[in-house]
Amino acid sequence: MKLSEILKNGIFDENPVLVQLVGLCSVLAVSTSFINGLSMGLAVIFVLCCSNIVVSLLRKVIPDTIRIPAFIVVIATFVTILEMFLNAYLESVYKALGIFLPLIVVNCTILARAESFASKNKLIPSLVDGLGMGLGFTLTLSILGAVRELLGKGTLLSGTAAEINVFGEGFQAAGIWVAPPGAFILLGIFIAVFNVIMKKRKAKAAE
Image (cartoon, rainbow, N blue to C red; front, side, top):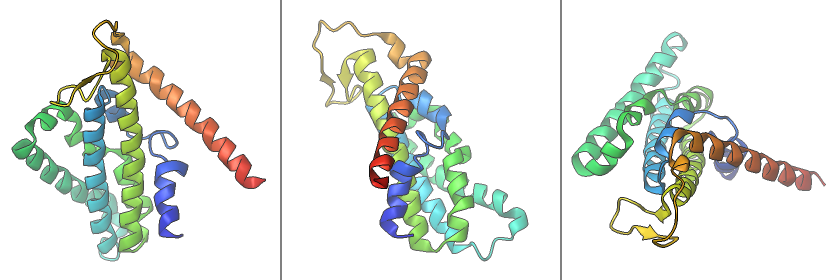
């Protein structure tokens, strides 16, 4: 498979959130704003790419009988490094992501890519696979966070110096969109729209 196809696969064809429906706990909990969604997405990209690289390099060394525990140790190492970095230099992001930052260790997307792709492929394809899956996760989380923030607060980039009050002072925000029910509703709509678009693309490609 070409590198461009591997990248596209992670963003569209096997999007971890909209197609595979994995890692939804952090998606629903963290996507209360664009910044939170983007931050979690970038964290997942870092861990995905780094863990895929290490797993690919060690794929012929790790015995099959202990491969899953070994993969988890690799993933946990990079999550710990990321936690320490954010806590030291980006404390606001560290606090915003909260308990869901260490839970990246058991994110199904990361473990699944280590098992199904990185453990069977060379370094560069594994890196691109991690980047593609990470971008698919990040784009979905960021857009979902932006929509929830707009509907639930009327702002973008809230909590930063660049905060924008999109709809003005008179906007009556609906708090449900930044609450758990709103996350479920919007994610369901996202999945439905995405599937319709992908089906139409496949139908055109088949013509």
